[in-house]
Length: 398
Image: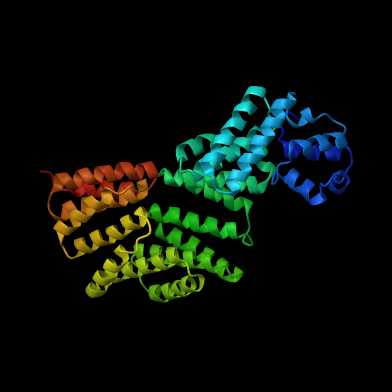
């Protein structure tokens, strides 16, 4: 059993003795708690482990893979403290304790707990936005047989990998992890809806707008059936974004009205801002001069974070290019590129830079921006890189 995790060991020992979960319960431990231990959703104290070992007529060492009572107690204390820190969202404290537990696990070969500890280490790193470190810890767990012991744990690991690789600009890899998550869940689970929204956002960043629309509409319909207003609103916002990116504006205003209604009912500021942002995009596409300028100034004072600010400035650049105000477009482009944005957003800005200098007839500068865009797009796995390369080939040579 040394290659198994604690939940699997507990379940096997119980079944080998023909005991039910209710049979194993006692001493303040309910059948429901035994179920939580076996599913990996709750971690017992050392004292509980000792009780379970006595009931199962084994030594407590079987739950560790090694014998050293002092260290066993220390590690279980660290695990409990780390889990409490996670629940309180004290991520730095949690990481420090998970690292200490990991070091004990390695030093004393407590093989039954290494998967649990590494899963939590990785997920904590995701919450600390240390994405590369998170991937290095979580990726080996995907091929560990213990991944299949619990769907909730598998979901957390795959989601951590999907979010981390997206933030690192590795969009195709992120898409793979989100697709794996869909195989764990069903339409009755709100996480299934969230995963479709995330998949759609990946497709949108890859420039695959029709695929994005399909995922967003699936998520919106399911969220509406479930009565989940927030997920329906975010699905509609993504849906309208993808439609407008594909150059389609029919029914956009009606959809945004629905999202606005949902945002108001929830009192959700970020949703309300996203709706306003998409209304701005529609005004740009429809060349509504007064409406665009008025909405832009209003949104500039409400922008919630740097990524949304980059998106907002991107709209200003596109507007300036449309009206051939190249000096303004250049100013806004430089400001946007100074912001700390993800690789996909940076790639979009670089593509706009190439378009700007192409319009101005500055071929060398256009080439520089487009080559940087190609590099960023290739890092993301986006097929838009081929489109940019074709644009490069059409540039006149000085």
